[in-house]
Image 1 (cartoon, rainbow, N blue to C red):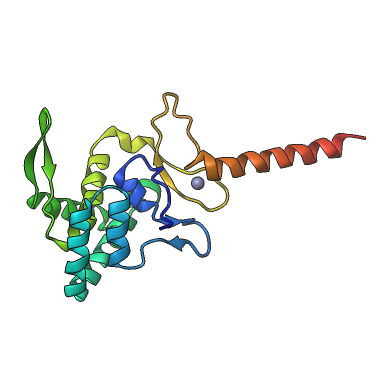
Image 2: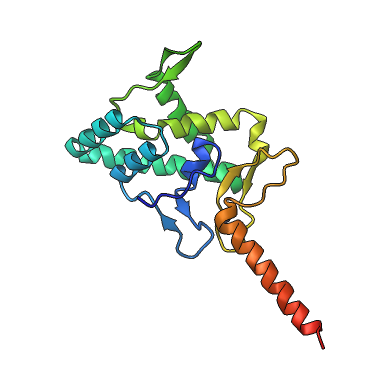
Length: 199
Ligand SMILES: [Zn+2]
């Protein structure tokens, strides 16, 4: 299915990372339509199989509403990215606040083992991306926001992640991709320098 790995550490950051290589001239968009949105939400474990199937059918029956929901999802995604990593636009906060309020207006407290948890209604098209709105508000209202970082890759990655390392030392979205690239280019530079200084 080819979605980016969930390296963000939070739903809203993983959602922001569904654009790969944001700083490149041609970033790679992983969500092309509402159907992709549902597939991604299922991949990120935000929808169970039954709800994902239900939403996909709902979208087929109401294509215009599904397209509008997809547009709203991407607006929320870009607002989240800006609030974490770029100058926010005027209505970014309002957009996230609205998504959160709509999501929570459908939520019910349901038993979850020893406590209770909020469960979102499964029969609304926006259900596919509401968890990202809820997650964004949960991030914005805690000091974890200060721990959000942009991948240090010079290759245009711009991936977001929550740095939960004790000393705040995480630099790469994914050691397996950007981290390795950085290591290789450092080693290459070192080898070149060594060659130049060797008589
Ligand atoms: Zn990266």
